[in-house]
Image (cartoon, rainbow, N blue to C red; front, side, top):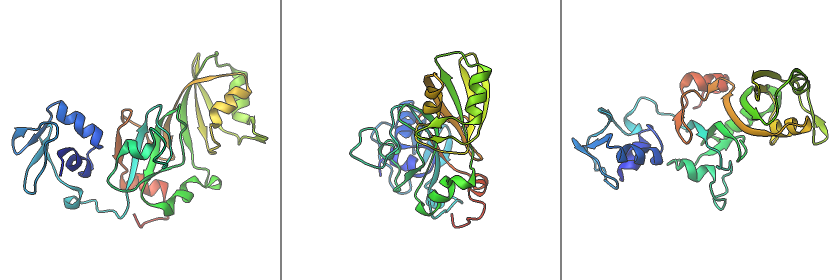
Length: 237
């Protein structure tokens, strides 16, 4: 097995990040600094930053399905269509067949959840569950009280009024918004309806799962606590 695949399957990071670790000489194979293209054989010891890593099969966490939090960079498309260049499935390159829960448009960045478990997608996305999603937004005009008030109250988008939400000013040209609705390009369209153009949009939270210290392109496995918060009545992980 290629070393980058071994590191990825340990659950530490993606293959791309594993390649970066190897290039930075932070990985050793049987006590020797690993090189790009190195292969792992049964019985070999792999160390990353001085700590041994092992395949998931030997770890405590043996879930039936994959649940990850990804920091989606700008330019990646949330689709499982492999003919689309820069599709999110190809970008993550996970060993399991996974797909995004919901979407985050190509021009936006931040937190998106992915899973191999199709049974839970509707539970998380169902609008009547009022699951919160939080965003940091930059716009090209100064944010004022009238803009914040109208955004919070609801804006007409595609022949419907958006649900009331919470909006807070962050800076002269920035605000934070918490939605319980997930219309396509909702924040951009709401802003445009009020004469504002969004030039930066980052999702930082989905329900109880936070983006935290993840860097663009990086992903991590969800914790049991996060899964319990997302799916309080679902135990077949």
